[in-house]
Length: 261
Image (cartoon, rainbow, N blue to C red; front, side):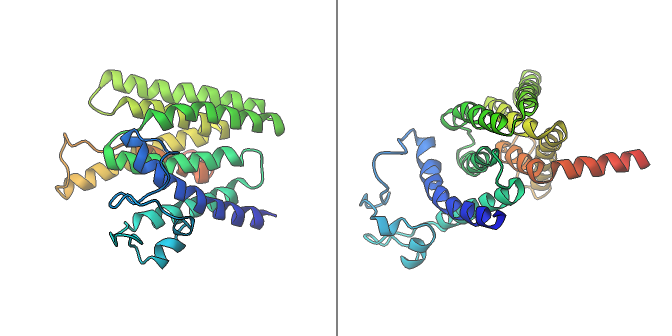
């Protein structure tokens, strides 16, 4: 059954990845993700259904618009493949439990928000704020089905703790990060806290480590300076995924080494 769930989620990820391409392009521009229909940004011709098949259409069209032959970025099929792989990995980790829809949603917004933040250095409220409601509903349903009300309560405290920590950081050093990062921290705290305090700690600290190491590397390569604006959202999201997939194991290994020291 697990294999069926993993394959099914992988195929679903291809479809969701195709939709995320629309989200990544339109949301930062304040455009509707529903209307108009998918179209070529160069010639404005509407794309037919057979031109919207994830990955396959891009390959058949050889990466060009059917009408004007403008190049279509390889990022489109890569987003679809990445989302499919991430969905399959989440399904393999979570299994056919009631929490699966919640963490698939987390995977989807992780892809969208990471690329948007890299593109425009902003985490849109249109994605972040509704994620609080979606997360509470999906995890609330999971808590009722399993049942696991303690996990949901811990998730709520995790949401407040992660949000509060980042809020204080912004108050102390406003130039260090944007308020979008603070709002995202609350969402991630909810999801990670539901799984455990150890998962939340690893996920939060993982984002700090990844961001710090990347900043040092970029400065050493002279690709960035001390005052350069480096999007922090992607590091937070990758850290959260590290927490999801390996947070408990990392925390256990760290505790074991600390006790032996």
